[in-house]
Length: 291
Image 1: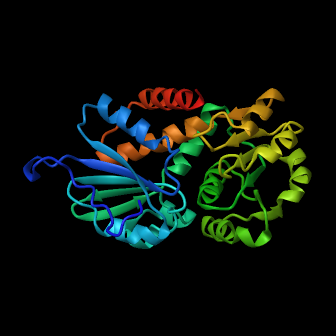
Image 2 (image 1 turned 45 degrees about the vertical axis):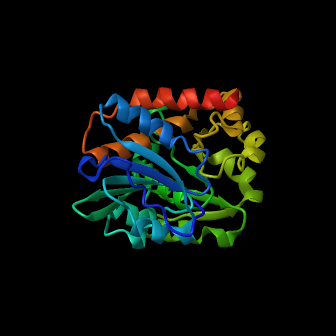
Image 3 (image 1 turned 180 degrees about the horizontal axis):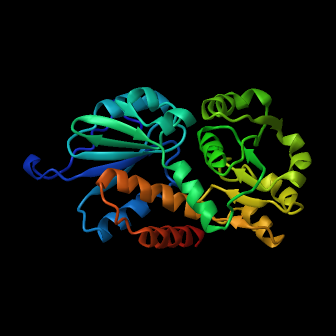
């Protein structure tokens, strides 16, 4: 989105036939699997909704949210907007406030409600992989998704995880979130990662696509389970390396599917969201991109 006026996302049908709508916001948003998954699920649920993808950065977010247009049911919030959206929402869940980021906005009765489905999705993906009590954990990155990872780790009993960043100063957001969550974090730089891996029970990478590639060789020499949350390029090089070494690999695509499915539950008010339909749609999209 690069226009002088923010998009209102108006439907082309007459006003009395307002179509329910939803969208994903982010920058860059082009590689997001969210539109593909949501459209497939909405069709399977018999809901005649539209779902759009909108390129939007932090400087444009306020204008976009100020002009939602008729029929807007909800928004999926991508990077780098999860933190910036908080002060622009009428009500925010305690979890979203604790982790410092909302990835979902739902509209009801003229008000907006923000929530975080990343934590739920991480816990679900970990459970599916059989990772229940890792004991210790290393988190790569310190942004909004890393803060969600800290909340998930707290639920698994990991109260002193290590956070690994390029520079110590980049860990401020994660350190603040840890304080709100009632846990402690040890901050390290990427150069220290090799010292942390031998004692780790779980490694979670929340880095952007490709950014964790340099650490693929390192994870081949640890017995830790490996969870790369990048689903838009699954399987990632980090996940492949861990799998080749015989480690437990937590499915990053599963994380993406579950956070999107939970979003649809919140937006539609229904519990019958077809997760397998969303998973197949995501797989098909990844195969098409690989051609």
